Image 1 (cartoon, rainbow, N blue to C red):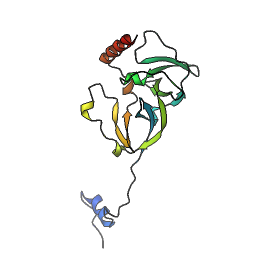
Image 2: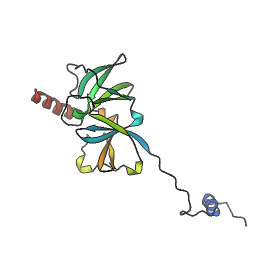
Image 3: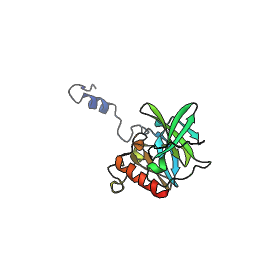
Image 4: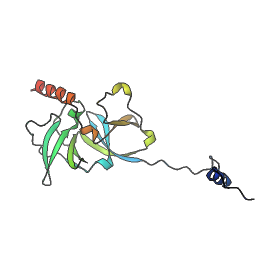
Length: 185
């Protein structure tokens, strides 16, 4: 018996001739994407692994006068001056002094390396894109474009961040952060 594979439906006719139903079709596993999971103020956050150059221990951070308020200072990374953004401050969380668990996540972005200070790096986790849920719109603002979504992992939520957008600081945010900084002094 010859099947006619002509006409616009020829691909579907060929597929039908194979006799494989949807129930019998092989299940193709969804690709997972690796993320660096870290903590800030006891909450779980993540950045895509492909956006991370490396993770380093915190050494001496040298403060820089008149730097943007989210910049904690600079460190020497193998002869390279690396600006370090305090991710707590960037996200509007209270600043904290680094401890033995604090790490700098180095992000290569826009032709330069920038470090982000996090409380602790926990692990590399792989998430399926279908597991990523949008951040509820009632907790977002027009300046929250750095949120890529939320993943439920066991009994906790992991907030996924966009590595480049999290480094963008809008003018109104700088004013508010500078006011907070002045108030603390």
